[in-house]
Amino acid sequence: MAGKRYFMGPLVLTIAVAIGTGVGCSRLVWEYAGWYGYYSLPPMAAPFWLMVLCYGLFWGLLGIAAGMALAVPLPPWEIATILRLYFLCLILSLAIPVCLLRWELPLISFVLAVLLLPLCCLLISAAARALRLAGLLLLPLFVFSTYQAYLLLGIYLLN
Image 1 (cartoon, rainbow, N blue to C red):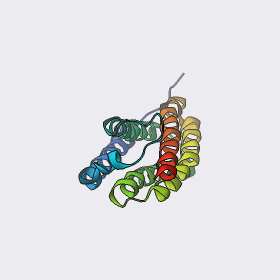
Image 2 (image 1 turned 90 degrees about the horizontal axis):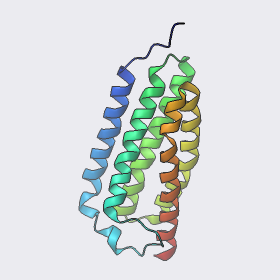
Image 3 (image 1 turned 120 degrees about the horizontal axis):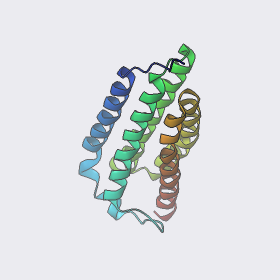
Image 4 (image 1 turned 120 degrees about the vertical axis):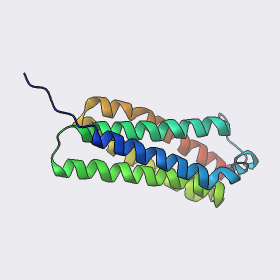
């Protein structure tokens, strides 16, 4: 029985884009990181260093899972769907810390976090259709996005 053939090109490319997004985000908000400490935070709010670590894992898992899903042979419309959802998740996850820390817009950050939740669900579904392991790798992404929406709602309501 012949197995599926996998290509490494999409995996390398999606990981590189995700790491580039992380580096770009850190360059954009690093000078404004102190603002996180000035916000009134809700209960169970993570410290800033833990949020940075979670974002790094978020982008890493996003790149790995999208690359794995794109590495299997898929019809062109499924490839396009996964790529669109991948880039939308990256753009929204980049915009959230920029809006919160650099521009001090907690409501806009919360709205973006809420928009990220269904995108994560759609990406998990599309990636799991292509490769079940890719969908499983994206489950922590949904958990972190849910926590992030809670945290941003608390920041908005308390400030």
